Image 1: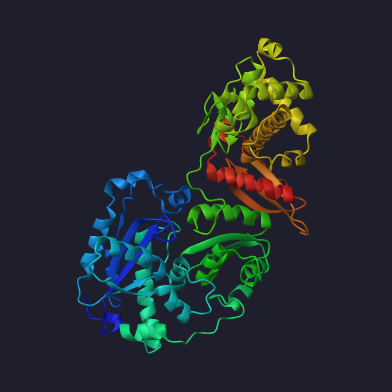
Image 2 (image 1 turned 135 degrees about the vertical axis):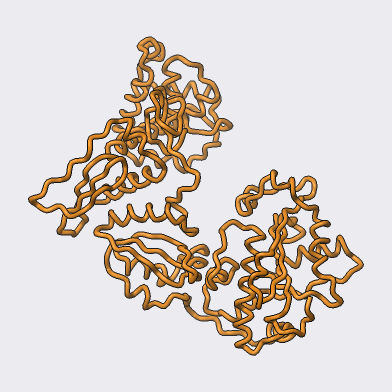
Length: 536
């Protein structure tokens, strides 16, 4: 390491990041450790960053929340390092007579774990780091930024950081930020490590703005058209942060930056990184909604939480509604469905009407509950009898002899949908699934699960019809009628429909072809089209 009297631009600085299971050594352990040695004048050294999973002590449980944030799985432990070995590897980079200069984003957090390691694994040696907090430097340099956490700050400066919390990405982001900050510090007459520590220790503090100030100039979003369309929020490096739709691009985009209250931390983090707005105007709000879902699936923006493709699948249920597959075939022809379990309540009900035993699995499926929360036999029998009496269901034996249990179940569910308003289902939303079961409660859940399954089947039938169709619509307040021509779930033509023109006819497509055209993308597109048509 070069001595700390060297210029910051040419100083070797150790960048460290820890991912942990808790907020302090008293409440958690280090789960992953990453580091690199960076020099502001040599950006290529950021690629030398390394990270290692750390073997948790015996008996330490990694919570589901930490697993989701970090991507931790037991399989990563095959190549994990014991904590002492990880400290030794990190310590090899700090063999100097004086403490090693280090840049850590939230230094107070990481330092508590690193000091704990130092005291446990090298108690006779002084703590080897002289660390500065990158967040504290940013707070002084950029007091107007709404947020200065690692992701917000890196994005503001032009570096994309994945939402998953991994040490390697965090180390590379911190190294990138350090290089940018060194240039800013030079403009403040801070040139050496000693200058930096003195500057941070000084009483000088920038005034905190009374209102949020975003990096994007207000003039940029004020010049957007007052028309429907799709907008994309961009980082300075061109990354797409967020995709949204609008009936008025000017008003919708401005609302992100002018909202006085209610903005979430995630939204403020994103808006801190926005340096420009790109947009595509559309002829209607309906077409903007369709373009939005297509764009989201194409660019996979990190701050969109809905309509992302991910690993989702579309399912098709068997004729008896008891199984589902990802592709339609001669047996599995009820679909498209958003889940393999979407109609399992009707399938289980059909089996019971056919005289099958009320096993725990069937009882759980009938009421739409996980297996561990299945009603007990007595409560289910009471509820099923009440369900039959209220629904005027034919006796189980007669249903079994008729050979038509599925048709009876479908007819029953249809009757429930037509007889009970949508609001009736809302009464059950706050009712905990794990609560004690009794006959009336089983009956209520049987009715709801059957009705929901029937609605899913009805929607699937509608989506198959819509997949190859012609749609004419007029937005509220518009003077022009628009049309969409769809073929196998894709829009092949769109335009204005004049009074003298005829609506283009869709290409005739057999049912198997309509089913086979569905995947998660086309399913979402037609579902959104349906929602927009309801709005109109």
